[in-house]
Length: 481
Image 1 (spheres, rainbow, N blue to C red):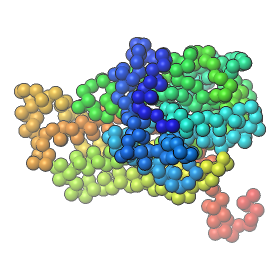
Image 2 (cartoon, rainbow, N blue to C red):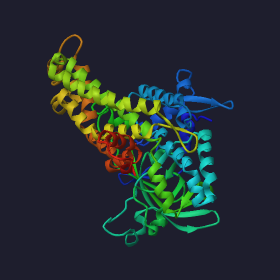
Image 3 (cartoon, rainbow, N blue to C red):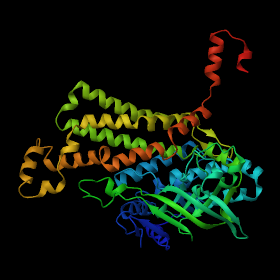
Image 4 (tube, rainbow, N blue to C red):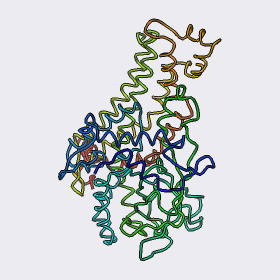
């Protein structure tokens, strides 16, 4: 059943070990670095119970309400409803968040698609996949996905490194397996559980088998330690950094210090073929909400740039219109790939409806690879004032406020305070430490660019272009072999 915000907050007050800035965190929900983003997740849970949002965020099955985000997609309408639910959430909170659960639970559906392959490898764990997908629907946990390992010195073979540089099984017991190692994961410190899966790699060497592991880890389990990067929230005045202080999704090095994974939470282990299969199909669903977030990011850039042009009448200039058109084409390119991936969606091995894989992955490449250029285009449209404008305190202080009000007021529609807010928003979106962090995060959050391109290569149908050229060049059928 759908949870409330209070139930979510109670769930993460489980005595978990969380560290940030050298400090052991007593309560994640109230700590300054986590409180804003935890409040966003709690708000998301509460919205599911409100009449104004319930239809957008939930669905009913067998008399029970469940989260649309956790619903395994079986129809095109399921995907459109997921899109509408994200739209409702982001407009309610007034910003963009990535790790809220829906983009990581999709990796479980990819596991279900590979159920037969995994069962062939090791039939003991196949039912665990189905059980966990049902459990996510029924219990509505905040589910994230453990990402890459520290890895260590990759010039050395994996057997020559400290074994803890990648998560591995150290022992079997009657209760389950014992694992050690570490993973980087966004939002882990305030999530309920994570799907721990193998890192990006070929997984073709059987000597890597100890590290070929897929399982569910409870984020408050004994031996799980969260060592977080410094947070952006609370670092500056929210009036000066409105995005960083509300939407920083704190990244964590999650250390697994001899953590027991019960057998019912194990999907596979010590099987490189399973790791190879999972890595090849992992993002077939989760890439959709991930790319969708970049659509809203594009909207923020367009809105910030256009407002800055309109306030001084510069939107009438042809050169300005052309740059705005570049941003619009980027935005519409993302939307077109998402819409098309639903329209041409494909049945999966498990009977789910997965977005058209070639179009979805091509859209991800477009959204991620062009983001740096689009951010710079927005900076050019906004101009240098995002790096020279004084902070909010200066607009209030006696002795400086009257001058700033004079020089930052343009007309009856654009007074100094609105202009200051727009410039502060634009700076935090494009030019702050937070903006730089978000850009780097986008480049690697679902995998690095080479992996994005590899996914396109695996899923694009090259037979059409080959056959067209064969016919146009009047070559024999043999060349297609």
